[in-house]
Image (tube, rainbow, N blue to C red; front, side, top):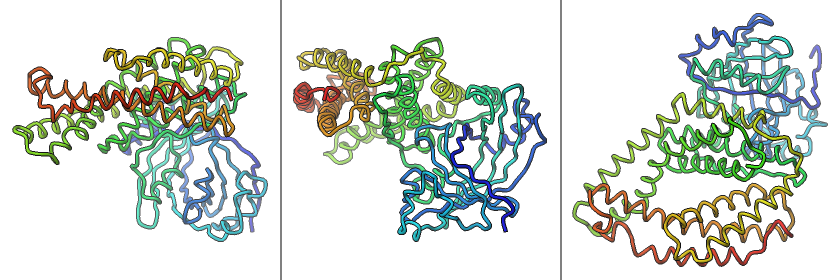
Length: 506
């Protein structure tokens, strides 16, 4: 018999998750910034079972159903993020239960209720479990109260397991900047890595055997009346998630993850430029400096990935060329060295600090000027300017210099990202049709100009390796015959783009 029932209809929790090394646990719990001063520390063992259908219908819809056992008592939690891109704020509904079996009737009145059809109810089963030893410190002064939870344990499915070692800072009273103040005080002394995935997300990745899969950009839905400042926050968070989510796979040497991390950085830089009217201040300039630094650390590895795919792969499959084996071996060594540089940068104090600074910069909104402009109004103006710039620059792209072709490619990329950012701002079948046509043309234009840029990079790499001019390199390696075909594709893509009416005017 349950002594009491606690049912939160719609609680919101704000927390910051930070991963740390098990070797730093002792230093962490004794750190001055995390010393409990509101109550003695508590230790508990938490055993949580997550329920879903075999095809993870709840997870796909953005929900988690969990039953947690603590000291012989059971608490059911239905949890959902405000959105997958928001690392701080989540919504949850809780109820105490008599056993570890979920009570689906308790989902009445929650956001999960409409999803619980008879079919889904019958298919629910345990999919993974977390076993966590949690030490809790309660911190605070004045109007600020923060709960610091040190979690050590693991996530396990029937056939896999992964360790958990993280610090959760949950805001009980105060402002989001108070969480970052504490996090920064600790991160200055102990390596902490921002974790943007919940234990539940990681559990479902383990269940689906997708732990180190690269993560692409998650679509952002921004209604037209959303204030421009809030729209920027949501867009920037989606970019930050793409950067952080790909860190483990990049460190494991995955080329696609490195590519996706770079896309996340470029998307964030594009968002800052698109919202430049509102994003201001020294903190913003520092963020842009750090983003440029990250791109420089990742750039050589990406260039050599493309070179390996475009040039070295053809060497292995084509006719034998004198010196080709040596060239392939030398470039593979350079590629390994470039990945070492990239991974060292990701594991560095500077990178960890930059990510934490960017997260605070986005979440606290201190960089934003006070504006009440609806995002639809701002987006229409920016989209029109970018479209006009591309039409002007691309009218005679065949005769543009390499530098001007590169600037046209950057403009096309920025408009493509902006089009994706504001996909939900201008809805309707007509807008969707025009948007998809514009996106396809912009992607083809960007890819063609990117191919031309890759050829120039390949020529420079081969010339540097040979210690000679690019003109002396074998044409089989630099694929000069591709240049004309790429130019024709770029011209065709530009013509298609110029013919598409603006989707934001429908």
